[in-house]
Amino acid sequence: MKKFKKIKFYLMSFFLLLPCILNAEKIGILPFKPVGIESNITAAIYQLMESELSSYGHIVIPPDKIEENIGENIECYNKQCAAEIGVQMGLERVIFGSLTKIGEKYIVSAIVVESQSGEILFSDKVTSQTAEDLDVCVFRLVKSIQYGKDVEKTAEVGKITEEEMETGVKRKKAFFASGLGFGMGMPVMGYGDPTDNTINYYGFKTWYETPRLAAEVDWYLGTSGIEIDLNEWALGISLIYFFTTTDFSPYLSLGVARKSITVGYFDYTSGLALETGGGIVVFRTYDFRLVIDGRLSTSFNTIGDLDGPHSALKIGINLLYKKEKGGGCFGF
Image (cartoon, rainbow, N blue to C red; front, side, top):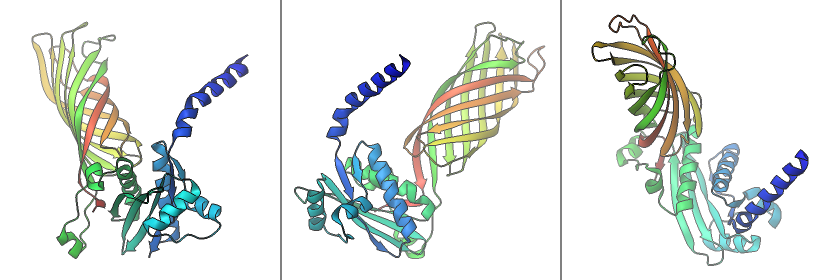
C-alpha cells in the first residue's frame, strides 16, 4: 500500500509539472571564442552558465551536446551563424561570445540571439579580477541575461575607473549588508532563574562583509513580562567567519556587547556581555539574503540581589540587503 501511494505521488507530481516542462524555453550555449584562457576554466564557465540558466526554469543545451548533434566542432561568433544553429537545433535562443584572459583578469562576453528572427536580445560582459571570482561574475551575467538588463543594473556593480584600468589596481571584494530582524530567547542562567520565561528580541544588524569574514554591528531590544518584568538593550560588535562562499553559508560568530538589563522597576545593571554563536546565510550571493542566527549572550554583572552570570539563548531571523562596495566582478 505504501509503495502504491509513493507511485501515485510521483505520477501526480509528474503530470503537475508536465506543463511547465513542455513550456520551458530551450536555450543553447555555443562554444565561446577562447583567447588565452585555459580549457578547464572554459569548461567550468559553461557548467556555471548551464546551472544558473537551468535554475530559472530553462532547458539548456551545453556546447558539447550541440557539437555532438551537429557532428563537427563549432566556431560561430556572429548572430547569423548563431541563429542558423538555433533553428537547426530547435532552440528559442542561442548564446555565443568570448572568453578572454589578460594577466590574472578574466573577461566573459555574452550575446543572446533569438533563433527565428536573428535579433540580438542581449549583449554585455563581466570582468573577474581572479579565477576565484568567476562564479559570482557568471551568476551576475546570467541574471542579466534572464531579465534582459545591463549587468550594472541587475547586479549592483560599479564600472572600473580609468585610473584602475591604467594602473591595474585590484579592488578587494567587500559588501555592506544591513537589515532588520526579530527572534525569541530563553534565559538559561541567572535572571532569577525564570526557566520558562521567554524574551522577545527586535533589532538592527549591519555587516561589513568579505567572502570569508564579516565585522558585525548589532543593536537589539529584548522585552519580557511573562514571569518577570525584564528589558534589555544591547549594542554589540562581532567577528563572523563563513565556512563557504555559496548560497547557503554556515558561519560562527564571537563578539562583545554593551548591555543594559532592567528587572522590575528598580533593579538595573549595565556592562559588557560575551556573545558566541553562529548561523546560516540563505541566498548569500543574492542582493537580499536571509540570516538565521543563534547566540548565547552572557552578562557577568549583578542585577539587584541577583548575582551573575546571566545568560540567554537567542534564536533570530534577519533579512539583510547587500550593497556591493567594490570587488572582483565588474560590469561594462
